Length: 335
Image 1 (spheres, rainbow, N blue to C red):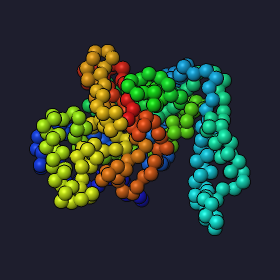
Image 2: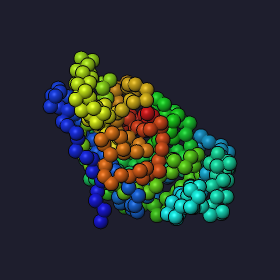
Image 3: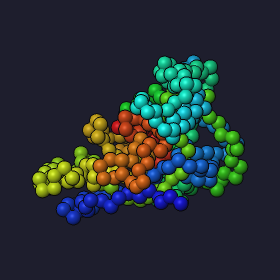
Image 4: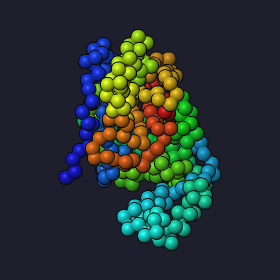
């Protein structure tokens, strides 16, 4: 049995030199998705959802006769790459050992801009991105609608919707809260769109290894005088320890990877607070979708690569919800 991925011990406790950071501490649950065979009863990324038979599966009607790639082709493409990687490399050092048939299929994908297939213009079923049970994810309960214990996340197989600041970097996303015990007759065959805009919008089925951690804010959310003292402390530490010295921003505050709760990073744009369209309240980070868990000292062991195959936003794609009323519409933001 493989060991569960876990976060390495922090290089140091940042609240020792800066005890005032204790007031800003938030818990987050790192999800550590890894390829597997989840069922509809499990928390997962890319697995089947616990969806009622008598509830219509959501669709998107925003796209016409668009071009994309069929999910079966995406999966076969991944199988080709995996098979070639597993073979001995050619002696001439020309790369992986593809067969001629495999080279032809890869060439077809490349020549079409990885969008070889055309849609007929009918409504597109949303993709099942993930589902999370409160029993598995400690930080989910503080966000849940009253009487619910299950969050299901679906997104459109094509980007271009307005879900919040910089949401054009990822697909339009829907959140569904429900009580798992109420789903007594789940669907057996889950709908799937006939094609997706990009292979990275189609998740690899993954089981989760939730782990609760403590995070501290992106520096722009802290008082300026505290940031100045942290900067001076980092400069002094780097003079004494060199390049190996940890930094607040990348080693001691926010973890990368898929997670529920915690603090939001603004490493691409600088701080851009997200506000609720319904009431104007500052929104709180619910879900982070990330292409990697490896950043500075945060990388878990064993190394995961990009287990979900998902890439949206620039690095991260985040769902924010209203702390005043969880029924208000969520917003998406990319970093």
